[in-house]
Length: 187
Image (cartoon, rainbow, N blue to C red; front, side, top):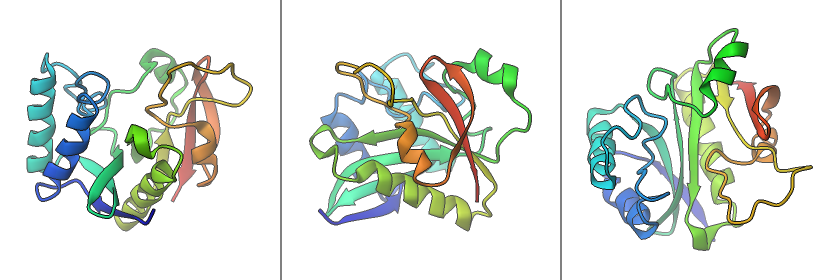
């Protein structure tokens, strides 16, 4: 498997859409909208699709797509907090916030048939490269702890596992839920 990356743009929209549609809209129709300001307010998978496409057309989305050849197999969503204000466990997050980050990594997705092949790592690496190109700063991620945790049957870690971010120099800052951490790195 030779992985390459490209940004989600109007030119790569169809590749993204094919992957999302092949995976039931991702989590039943999310279309990677959960972190955006309007979240799921569109009210339907079709509404989420339209909202995501508007973000792409308007340039209000930062997302790296991962390809195996010509086939899009995953992505990593990132952006400044104003672009991605919605995070899980928000009340717990707000209690411990000191300095807001410059960037957030939101959602990571890998096509089910391509998991375990380095797609998520390639996506995060490319997102961090894009953040560096944009000037860098403090980057936050909100992964789930998988070590010392009971197996999660059927679970998908949509924000990624903690050990993935540790590979890129992220460190734990604080917990926001039993198995979820705020992790930070400075680029």
